[in-house]
Amino acid sequence: MRRILKLRTVKVLLAGAFISLLWASPALAHGELDSSSPAPAEVMQSAPKEIILYFNEAVTPVARSIEMYNEDGQRIVVGEALVSPEDPAVLIASGVPNIPDGLYVVAWRALSDDGHAIDGAYTFQIGSAEGVLATQDLINNVLSGQSGPAGLSWVMGIARFAGFAGLCLILGCLAMMVGGGIRSRRLAKVVGLGWVLSFASTVTLFVTQGPYAIAGKWSDVWSTSLWSDILDTRQGRAILIREILLLGILGLLIALRKNFHRSATSWWRSSAVLLGAGVVLTFSAAGHPSASSSSNLAIAIDAVHFASVILWTGGLVAMAFLAKKTDFAEVVRKFSKMATIAIPLAVLSGLWQTWHLVPALSDITETTWGKTLVVKTTIAIAVVTLGGVARWLIHRGHSVSIRRVLLLELGLVAIIFGVTSSLVAASPEVTAPDSVYLVQAVNGDTISNIAVTPGRTGNNEIHVTISTPSGALDPVQNITMRLTLPDSEVPTIAVPVTELAPNHFSGSVGILFPGLWTLEIFLEPDSQSSIRLSTNIQIPG
Image (cartoon, one colour):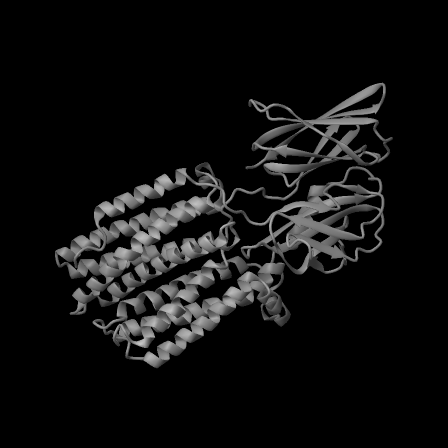
């Protein structure tokens, strides 16, 4: 073997991986609720006719996307949630019945533009409050019943792992066998095993997408109506296309059977490349890259990254299976040629993805996605290092030791696939755990229920309702609000206030910096007295 990759090149690429993290810029986030009608914590004089949710990106409704519950946790039937014809980022549920006074929860669930399920809940009120109601406890009780079937995330994670591993076995090993020079029935069987894993993974991901989207039951995997709904989503269409392309690959494998060594100019090589590229694109077109502002470029680079990793790791599998063959020198030559291209492409495209998806270096350890990426990168560095060890052993003809090192590399690659399975299900950006920040401020018998939407940096809407433990309170004459970020040079922000109803106020304000803000509310119940209410509001980046 000549050289798989020069050591200097590896050092430069790994150094670039660190430097690129310093230049990261924001690119996308999972869909989030920006505002709604009724608004969080709003006090209405009569029941609303419809519920409207405004998101920060286009969303796809699912079965029972918008639901209502009363303060006893009983579900109130409303109309089906539909996308607004004017704006794909708006969901509307009409047909709200004439409900009595009281506290109500709006629970919502939808698919964001990158195919991930997003959900949340908030409360609003009709009429005067009777005492102090534990709104957050009510929301938690409602959401606890919408968590989906137990073990679903594990099943989907295993299916994603099987899909990555299967595609590695199909395309990586097939690439090693094209053009002649390598004949192995064992490797042909490995390709067949890879197809079984990939197809089983694809079918599993499709049928589990339904209960995942609606937080339903295990029996929902057989719901044909849910299958139809999933086919209307980007994720569902990508999975269906993947199934069709995999069936095309199966037809190709059956046609070839024992003739994988045919010449590099034969028709089957071109067919395999086209089908394989199509399968790879279905992964990229349904994940995080598809939701970014430059989605076409992001999808293309993600596909290059995925294809490079598949060819590299698939070549390692072929080398491990063929390490004891007499024509191992030919195996090494082909892998060297393939890896010399695949490894730099995998690293460089991975650098670009990190720069594109991660808002800032400081956010790396603040999200599950970032922590998982660090783990994946560390293991990948270990695999590249072992590749250098394998090269050293090959130069010295230690065939037994080479196979052991290759098996160790494959073990680490399997871990990378497992880590990647969880990576694609997490959000790259730091987001608020809830789309509505709820808090209460109390001064004597005066209670202020406060809702901040969406509760993150940027434009926010603050709703304030004033009450007492008995529920009886004359309308206050005047109210002012201000926000302060303690221990900082950020000036105090005065919040303009609008009265929506007696003792119900709202204000819009731009919060540019994350941190623990102090909200002060000054009330004038009458011309002779004033009350100060204060509370802290945590604003994530």
